[in-house]
Image (cartoon, rainbow, N blue to C red; front, side):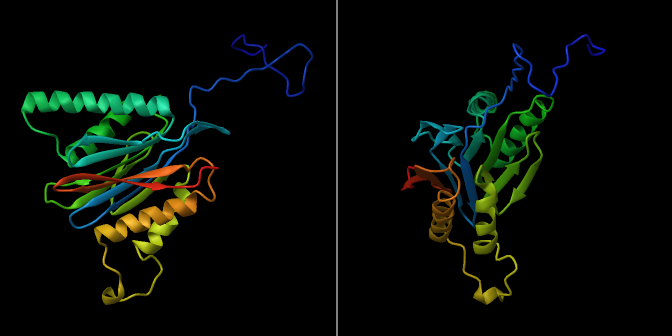
Length: 235
């Protein structure tokens, strides 16, 4: 018996005794990529929803439109994703009814950080990336850790294949460890951002079993949000 009065199970197997572990979290996979440009932002996520070696859905979108210029990508525990995104939509509707205007991308980013920090003792098991257009009409990307720390970036990858996706973005978008003159760097256009995001997912689907089936790509501009779909391998 322990000091708290709970029986301690031995490390070796005992006949008739079964030690059952319980975890409140479940990883349902998925990956996100976001890229910000001068007057646009591109955010993409795969549509596979899985648990272990079981695929629950091949067509589940992980991109949530919060406004006409802001999109949240969220993967991880799907129950936490639905809880968090539902709460965000309610708060945005409340803000719009109170102030008679739509919340800006910067304000949404701050609100998401506060919402996640409020759950710091029992965090949302999610990987969040927010993309949109800021007050100056430029593309912005925000990434978060589980307790709400927010970082503004030009490009970011997350989810189960995040470690596979980020190095590709570092090379193709950030030009990391490449001795290139400014004149030799390829200009980041909307078409190139979509192409790079597509290529990263095609590569990740070959290595990560939790990423696949298809990719939904949201192209955010001052005119609204354009949606494209890219098929991936389904095994």
